Image (cartoon, rainbow, N blue to C red; front, top):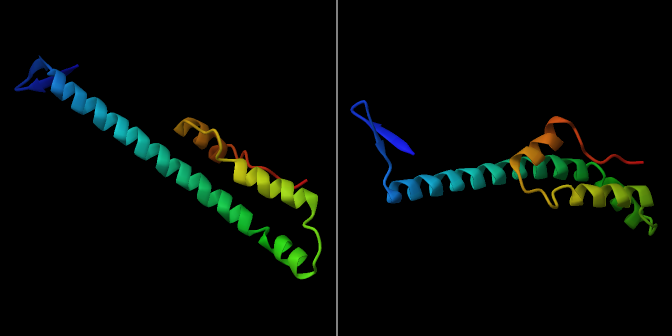
Length: 101
C-alpha cells in the first residue's frame, strides 16, 4: 500500500500498514455492531407489539397461542448466526421478518 507525500508515492512502513489494517478492522466491527443494533431495535419493536398476547394469556391463566409463541421465538432468533453487515442489511432492506401464521 502506498501513501502520497508532496505528490510522491511512498510505500507504507510495516507499522503504518498494521495500524491502517487495525483501523479498518475496528471500523468494520463498529459498523457491524451499529447495523445489528438497528435490527435489534426493529425486532424489539415487533416483539413489543405482541406483548399484549402474553399479558392477556397470563392474566386469564391461559396458554399463549402457539402461533404467537412461534412468532416471538422467530423474532428472537432473527439475529442469530449473522456475521456480516450485508446479511443484516438484506433483512432490513427486503423486510425479511417473521410473520404470525
